[in-house]
Amino acid sequence: MKSLLPGATLGVMGGGQLGRMFVHAAQRMGYFTAVLDPDENSPAGRVSHHHVRADYLDELGLAQLSGHAEAITTEFENVPAGAMARLAEHRPVAPGAKAVAIAQDRTEEKAHFTRCGVRCAPYAAITSEEDIARAGDDLLPGILKTSRLGYDGKGQARVATRAELRAAWQNLGRTDCVLEKMLPLAFECSVVVARGRDGAMVHLPVQRNLHRNGILAVTEVHEQCIAPAQAQQAVAATRAIAQGLDYVGVLCVEFFGLEDGSLVVNEMAPRPHNSGHWSIEGADVSQFELQVRTLAGLPLVQPRQHSPAIMLNLLGDLWFREAGRELTPDWAGVLALPGTHLHLYGKLSARPGRKMGHLTVTGPSLEAVRATALQAAQCLG
Ligand code: ADP
Ligand code: MG
Image (cartoon, rainbow, N blue to C red; front, side, top):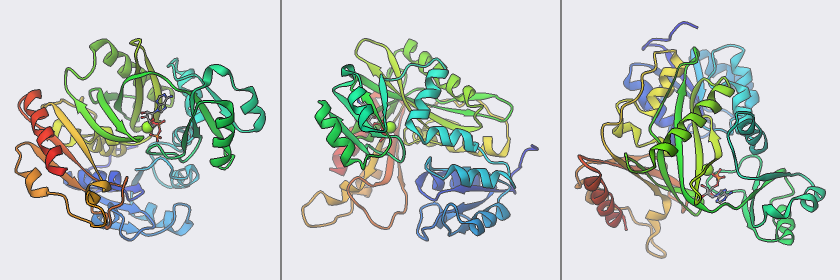
């Protein structure tokens, strides 16, 4: 495929915050954009040149999107793989339907990791009562996760006994699941890689992630956030996983660092990732610009981090700190701090647990960034 130069129109399936930041990156570089999302108020749809309001499998909608856009990507992993395949009949699509289908299914995803020689948590597929009876004792206590459609800790249950496992599977609607052994986590980290059609790969530095209630809360990226040997291992594993998929686009792989110093892979997302948002201000090429470059077939250059960075997720809970009353967080207070970069996604209503925005802090030193992030967190309550 010939490169699509600025002036061309790039399309994205899904209109959430990741699509919005893709649209912003593309527009900054002089591209036109088209978004397909059924919601007229979707964060990306509202800032895109074209917004096709249609369901993801709507034939007319898909035809409209490929009418506008000369190449198409996705911003959420649960886009029906069939829709990506349909679009690919008319336009270059990245990532491909096959990679998206694997990333959508935890069982297939784990099989892919194993094929690539990357270790994941011990697990068993749970699709029947017999699977529950057969699952090894060594998998308990464990976490039962739906194979498909889980995110931000949803579709998961922690189980200590086989009786709890049985009850949890009932609660999850007896849908296909995986039971994963509960691992002693020392830390969590992730790596964002971008791979072009020619197989060239570049990556962002390893990101250290803190989750609360199954949702990403804080990401830190600096030289001390992970030991160099573990960082190298995480990057090598991520590259092997992307290579094994013959992946084109931006891929994020999440890892668990265990107490014994070993690293196991958790899951992957076939798109930019919440843990990579810091790169908009903390690196000279962001994960969204990488997505634009891979989609348009532009050269990939290794991003350079030019500042330590801490990213704080802004969840809807911030609007509900006082019982019975919705209040706007103190944005002016946060913006009075040097090195803060506020991102709000334009969602019309806040709800607890909903990702409303994020705040990235950059600065001249890790100490300065830490101090500012702490002040910002206090300011937000
Ligand atoms: P999601 O798709 O919701 O992000 P994850 O599989 O990443 O689901 O799980 C969410 C969080 O739950 C992880 O970031 C981690 O903190 C915790 N977790 C998941 N699996 C395990 C495990 N096997 N052992 C210990 N903690 C886990
Ligand atoms: Mg996760």
